[in-house]
Image 1: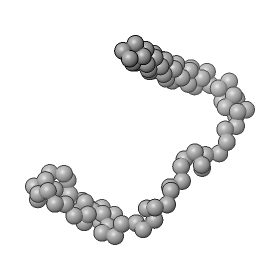
Image 2: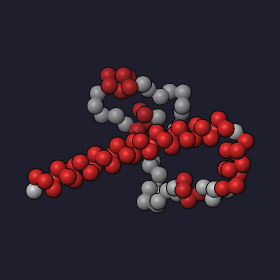
Image 3: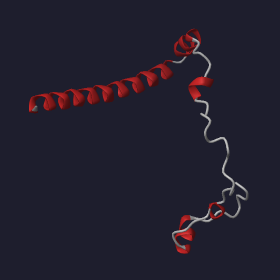
Image 4: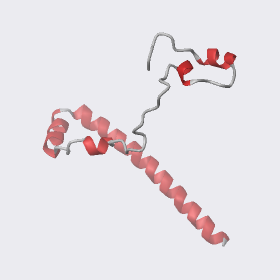
Length: 97
């Protein structure tokens, strides 16, 4: 970004027409040259989980443990729903063949 103070809003760009230059979006004209390189993933940079520290944090904060359990229960229910749908779809495909 070259100048953050003069970035047009979407309606300004629509009024000008279909052709939009990068400079109108407040972007540099020269794109980065390292686009072919793989960006590092967050998983590559995360330190290993200290299980003792997690257990200690959960023991010290029952509300945190309850919130984590709620999140896991919600995701587990969604996963079971998707699994049931996949099984039904597989059954309907095999019975129609």
